[in-house]
Amino acid sequence: SGLLTTFQITGMTCAACSSRIEKGLSRMEGVNQANVNLAIEQATVRYDPKVINVNQLRDKVEALGYGTVTES
Ligand code: 9UX
Image (tube, rainbow, N blue to C red; front, side, top):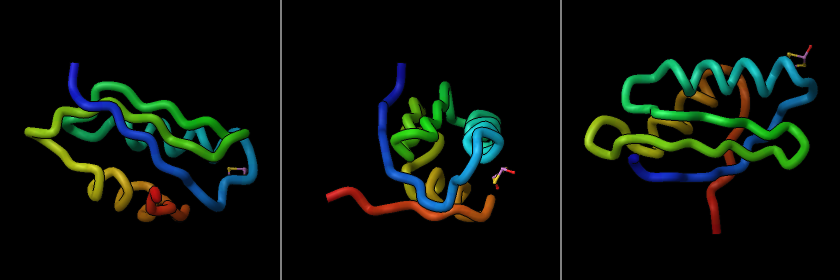
């Protein structure tokens, strides 16, 4: 259940980067599932919009030291 969002991430250079982001997102309250694909530099997150929003997801990625790209 929940909403699915995808956004681009910059600054990842190895699989530990994507794993770190995936774990960080997964542990946030309101996140049901998070996957980060290193090859396509993309996060896919299922979340409960009553609990958390996309800006908070992006802020988390940035707090971990990576960049996010606004979708067109
Ligand atoms: Mo890999 Mo990412 O050594 O910050 S973990 S580059």
